Image (cartoon, rainbow, N blue to C red; front, side, top):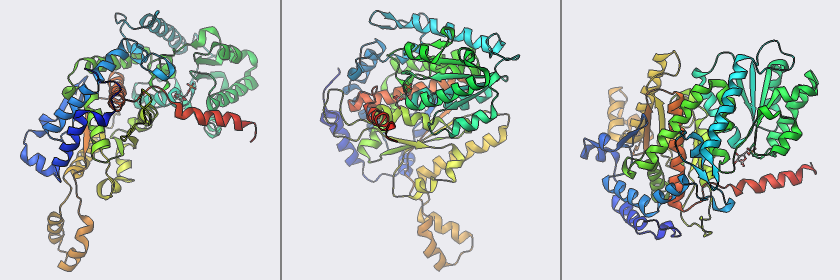
Length: 526
Ligand code: F6P
């Protein structure tokens, strides 16, 4: 039964976890593996083609049992069911949280009060399909162009940019050959200026993506792009060279967005959860509508799993349980995301917003000050680059950073052998993090190299790797649209579960609003 309103640290299981953490003592993963030969099988789970190996963690069967009890005691299942039922669980904005409806099958029933969300979503997908098809076959083209659009530029920021940018890179090998799709987000002008130098206005389509259509960065970039188009092709070209995704019809009218090229979004979709909506238009243009629908199907499969599986087999819940264990009981305050596939190079940035804008809060859903650490700091970088950048700190630093390794079994490019090496590196790193290298092992290595005794005495301590550094391996067969959809939904529901455990409303972002307001006020003075 749910215990809404109870502070996390007041829960019986929270206290039991504290006691368990003290009993745990200075255990080493070497011992955990030595004691249990089946550890890798016991601490692994699979769903939607994604395999989690969480054996390299400072947990025992008891830890897992207590954490899954915490999930139950915190009422995660109850809140999840209320989210899927369209209740207004985003209480500070009085909104439903129904990004899951964006990937619904036609038969699924999602409502926000009187609104039939499933029907509206499918009507929107049909319109997107028509638009994407028209751009691809050239029936939708520039004002003075003899050939179809060659370039699409998504202008947006935060949730109106990060998902699109991440997925464009991740699914590069699924793109349609005839179209290049770019993203512009920052306000300083450099990104857009560099891009415009390369583009031909006659064959460039801009997608202005902004739920509010008031965001300063996006509106500034859109205005520059508009001037560029009008300068080259005249004012009549705006209606042909701009599409938009927004809730703000009035602002789209004022900008000159043609009715056929505007796509709505709803209040029940948060920016950082919006890649599944028409916010994904630039992505759909890049990979085609069949692939976009496969991406949605992947998200839907993870939704089903999240709703049905028991906590100890539930992938999003498992990730959240581990995260809470380290964040709140073992003193880690950040987590690194380390994909061993360059295509997932923007995944850490995408996850930063998803986690930190959702759970970076210090007040609970019912208005209490939260007294336990919340909102894990997320950071990371793609595989081998990271090894040659910050892994030193991860291996031997005084800080303690659990990591998620993510990789497909198959290469995302024709270069299969280098991908094999990337996987070897990932597994080697996971092994080094877990087991380290003891002083005896270091000394034996140095002796075998023929080093003299005094030099060994001086050097050995610098080469010791304490190990015991936790990591999760997240593996799947290949990085395709469906799997990417499941992967994104996996983390969305992880964030949801963490927020429910901490008692946070993961769906507002008041912390971003103050800065926006001040920037607007100061704009006149600078
Ligand atoms: O960064 C804060 C934020 O409000 C995000 O939640 C949102 O994704 C982003 O700004 C962009 O907002 P909009 O889509 O309205 O331009």
